[in-house]
Image (cartoon, rainbow, N blue to C red; front, top):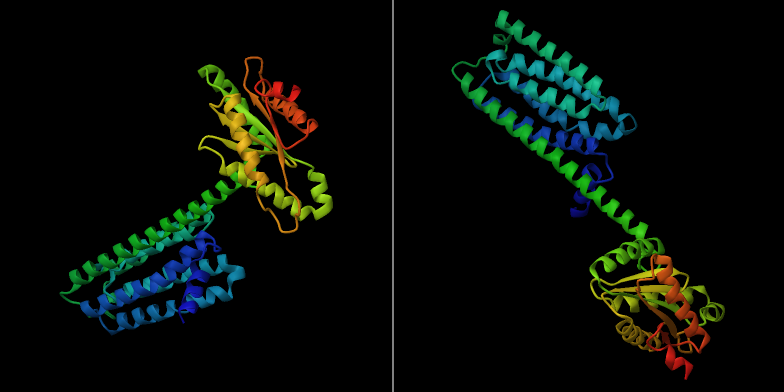
Length: 375
């Protein structure tokens, strides 16, 4: 039973429904409650049997609106317009003449009708035009009741309770409008939250690699471009390390591309796990990754890169892989001669090439440990 109730409310008010339809459904279900309150107010103020009958018909008639809206969902705009016309040109006028006329609180309900028309009709010109007709019609029937009060008196027996009826109707209408406006505001808030979430996801997809969750190459280049300028202005160091999986093509050939993807994801996870809060990891292309370390010198970058290299070589990435998987890295530190991100990456790439050519599974910097390679 609980699941059915949840499914019902999700169908009526879920985010898959347009805001207007959700608000219409809220107005329908709220309308039943408010109509029931108006019926109770009618009983308390003792306006007469005719008014009570119309109130009861209105209250239970609202229960048919939602099922009918489901049946006419392909023509929902026409259906909503029909409900608004029936409410404003038939139901409210009938209630007006059966619960006391202009001296009762019923004219307050005309405000509700106009508000609903403005909110539920999409096209502004039509909404304003229909609302204007409603104002003229409501003014006409109130004018007629003022000239011929016997029209309302024929159905209504309300005497000294006229002020009680007006007060009760004022309370019901005020509560009705306040709740429905709040419901509409909540719809917009939920829709805005959903939109913000989608925008955040789109922004993340624009800068993140879908396989690994690391930043993509485009983000890396923009980040380095601003990072180079900031580092030079503030006199701070920046180091990058370009990592590459050793003999990756052979891994794909021997174990398949799915295992190759697992190896790539494992390297990305290892790099991101090693990051400080202000480091970034970017997938540069294929099996190549760049780790950016603001504030680090070449010596510090090499020490950290060595720790990453050793940690990765000890990983058991997949049961199918029966040999160690290693990585090589090229380190570069920002120097005055470097003007652009491409120049910065080129230095790291050259050192990575040196690491590959001199045996793989090692980290090479420009000045710090090149002398060790020559020995």
